[in-house]
Length: 272
Image (cartoon, rainbow, N blue to C red; front, side, top):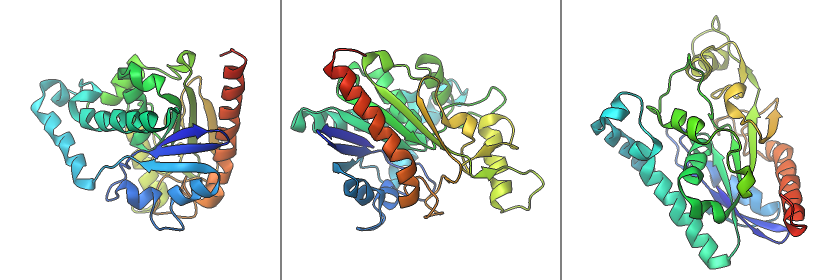
């Protein structure tokens, strides 16, 4: 997502969800009253824009199979996700051209590391962006883990590590949940067992805390403002506990607002 700064208000551009079986509109605007979009607006964000990605478009990732580096697990993000990164560029440029105000990118799940990839490859996008906020994003893969992006995520971590663009004026805020401990011995289908399986892919071990999909060790970036929420879960399938739930938003959003306020003050006095 991306937010545009307008005085005390902000504008948000939200990424499209990679949640299986969901489109981003299902996630951030699941209803006129209850979606993340309307919740952010009620909290003072002047406008919230959604990155338009339809569910079938994610099938374009399969095209990466035509690339030998993708098949070998060494592909950069553009190989399979270039179309998505282009969409981010276009959306931010449109907002910036219409308002003259920098955008705040808000990415849930894969949208978080894809936001880093987009910023890392496009200097113009950096100049039009003030911050990247990620919610339950799988930023890191342990050497013992499994890179399901076929090299794209490892590329981002290698080329654009941590708060890579902080010196260019980009604030980084990573939000991770620690609501679920993975348990290998738990019954199949339970949150504990499914979390264990998911965590192993990223962290190389499953007996750790996370949001049910992403282990906490993968959700944070060095140099970022790191916000850990003990009760937060990854999926909208847990509507009262996921990152976009009213009670959960009120745990991370005030800290994001404070971060942006300090950024504005530092800019006003000419200090980064």
